[in-house]
Image 1 (cartoon, rainbow, N blue to C red):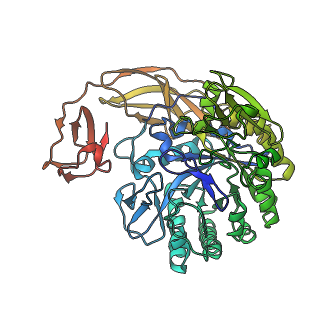
Image 2 (tube, helix red, strand yellow):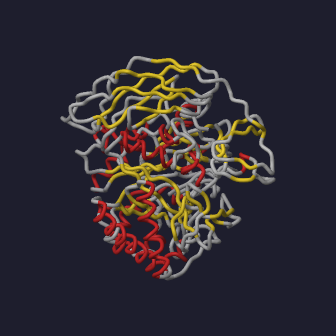
Image 3 (spheres, rainbow, N blue to C red):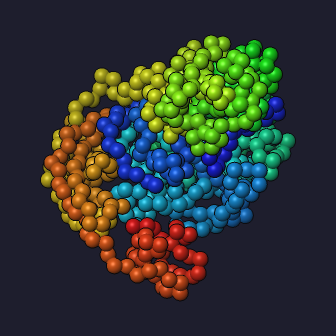
Length: 597
């Protein structure tokens, strides 16, 4: 899918569609509906980029998953000769790493799927984790989300703009296709995903210049997907479930030419079309990020491929290629693209510009929430509407900045298009771009009837948990227990809230970690059921964490056992794996060995 910041970018040009777009805080508790809109046949698939939990400060639990049916977790990568990553210097992240799982470096056959960022994916501690948990990081939080929201399905997305360099090699032989397919089953089972999404950017041509390409990619892509489908079906028969297989697809005519879409449609569950990033700062004339319909004025202004680069034309191209409508999912962006120094004619639209303005996280790219809070009819920016393309745009005449984006009105046109064409639903990039849930709510209201999971069903809340008690404290954690609640159908878990944060657990005890020493915390607990009903909060208890323990400073040449604690640059760390330290093995640099307490 599209990746912004340090990992992936999507971009459209004549012969290729370039995908441009490539801290943990406590969970603010929200009583959200937690089951699927099973009365709707539409899908809403939202991407969560692993790096959202870094500097963007958007952890997994911030997603309002009551309004989606699926989460695509971006990204896993492909291991080749013991490493993964893409050293292409033209890419946003030109480096490689050893192939790893949550425990460290692993040896796997070429073409195997591996964690993209083992630290954030599976090793980093979040609230509620303990150092001894076998799996932590984002993947554990996704599992907890599914436990709390039984309707929710999670899909691991492999590749993306940065990490598509080994797809051609992997698809080229029967053996590496087998390796990939076997590893897909292992990955889904181990990390409790419900499916896999192949985001190959792109077969035959396109993508980063250093990627592998072959003319045979056209056929090999189909063979790779069939190998995965066969393995997923066999695993599903054993596991008593259906494992989903999807792809992310470019919207250009070149992509359709370079893939056997009719054959692929017979293999996959659905195809997510990347119907955005049609125009951006790589070109000098302002135009629209994600127009729904063709605007002849764009062609008149010299915008390349305007007749093809819009949502309706892309969908029609897939229909013409033999893809059933209900297997087509329309992509929508939760961000806009901008230019600066644009001439004032037409309020900056289709005008010559001099560059790109600073964006939310990278030049020229603006999260919708940033636009909503700071730009739309604010600070000199005026909203305008293109009634042909059915998209809004902003223009500030004082600095010549033009920003094309999507809002509630344009989303309404896109959901109406999905319904009128009988498409499978909507896919969006990505959750953190819409922190106020403005666009997500519109998608859910239109396609999932507001995300109501249980129309006419169970509305009885569980009983209030009783007996909440503190069972232990450390300088960084508080342990709690309580009596089980009851429910007319069944309790599926509990939410412990404290000092403005909360964490989901499945049993009647929890250790809340990551707390500050010598600090008072007040806790309460609520029960939840499968229909998303929450009980009233229990009676509160207060506990104070212990004073910070004395810990020695980290030093090279010292043997450290599991659980030993050291300080380094004023931060307390706990040892995860027994080892004798070496120069350069300081805790922040070797996260597999040390975990901040």
